[in-house]
Image 1 (cartoon, rainbow, N blue to C red):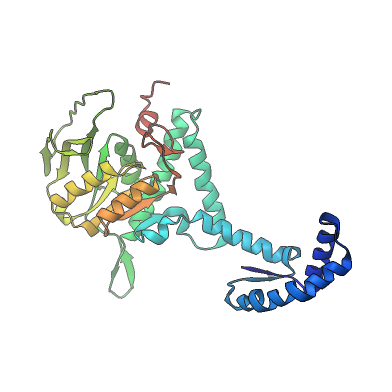
Image 2 (tube, rainbow, N blue to C red):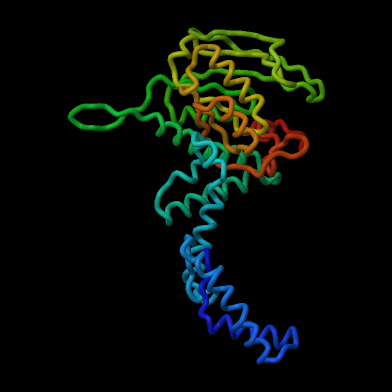
Length: 327
């Protein structure tokens, strides 16, 4: 970007600066300008003008041009750099066309994020706005699974063979919203226990249903995490799988869940990871290990703190959603 000012303006500013701030007389300033400044500008600065992507005439006085550039920069800042690195990352606020609709939709999402991140938000409001965001993520995912039907009317139909798999327990908060988007969808569950969480022991009791495979695995480790419980449809290898976990942090739990789904015969390209917020580190980990998987989220976070917590985050999502937090 180059701010292009008239030569007279440049000279006037130089005279004012050198006479007021440096105590020089006008003759000395003009002599230096004509012998050194102007030739150097013409030899080294002016030729670079042809390489500029944007040239703003009249510099800071051109308010219209500056406002347009500021608006463009703000739009780009709203699009995380991960878009360029990980092409399979989809952030729902960036998928809508039209500036007016985009801004209203963007601030609607930002408003809901503001509410669910506020520790003073009531449980009722937290659940209500979390469900709205989850439905938006689910609807975006459903649209991605359209396939064309060749007939008299060239329309589209939804992918019929879907399966949702929630990472217990926060992922279960996304199940109702997913059912609202995908009527009659089959659901599976995965429990991944993190070691070091106050040495808590997890006991899982769920009824079994037809066409459900139950696996209990106690010593399948990945870093400091253990796969404790798996319940998946028996025909999961033939389905598109929507993996549910509201927060993507460091990515270790997601990697283990995806690895399990692939071991059950699910093609990597058939897995879509749905969450509400994602840390850049987790996105990089998942996309690097599984380049054909897709991630759909509503917002990219700043990153992780020294305790590998998402920043700014929204607290313990499962506790806040199910009302089991201490406060």
